[in-house]
Length: 177
Ligand code: AR6
Image 1: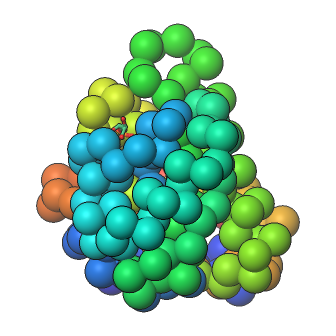
Image 2: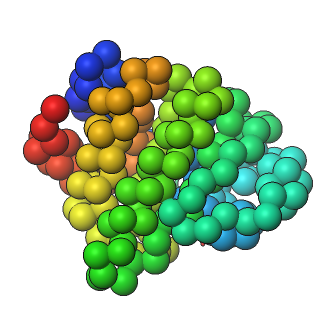
């Protein structure tokens, strides 16, 4: 497994299906309505069962760059943290919003006693964020958070494709502690 130690915490990269993760929380690349949708969100809702949407629809949506939390229902993870990534536009605002997705998700993790958390590659599918750019923003955001928050022990990126793992691995090698 590819990993980087940040003080006593670990950033890990794995290839796989995030719905199978046994971390305390998994992070969904959600839409603003928190509805099932497609991509990883559709897969998470399918695996979690209808209770997830029942719970999520009572929340008043989620803005881009923000995050909200529900239970994991039929998933192994206790919680699903839903964050809405930016639709890639090529403007400097994209990276600010993507960084905010990670910071807000991790803040929710800390306040819910989540010690291990798995992220999908937010915004890099339907929302069109180029993977090399997203990898840099995402990995640096997590590194920065872990430097200040030792209570989070493991942050795992669960990437769907072998190519995404290769891109994240190359980027992880450039992240300084
Ligand atoms: N496990 C891990 N990663 C996955 C899985 C899975 N089971 N399935 C897909 N991916 P996307 P976005 C990867 O499009 O770009 C939805 O409809 C996928 O290969 O799911 O933030 C929402 O409702 C890609 O690398 O998220 C929103 O409307 C990554 O997850 C919109 O899409 C993210 O791709 C969000 O778009």
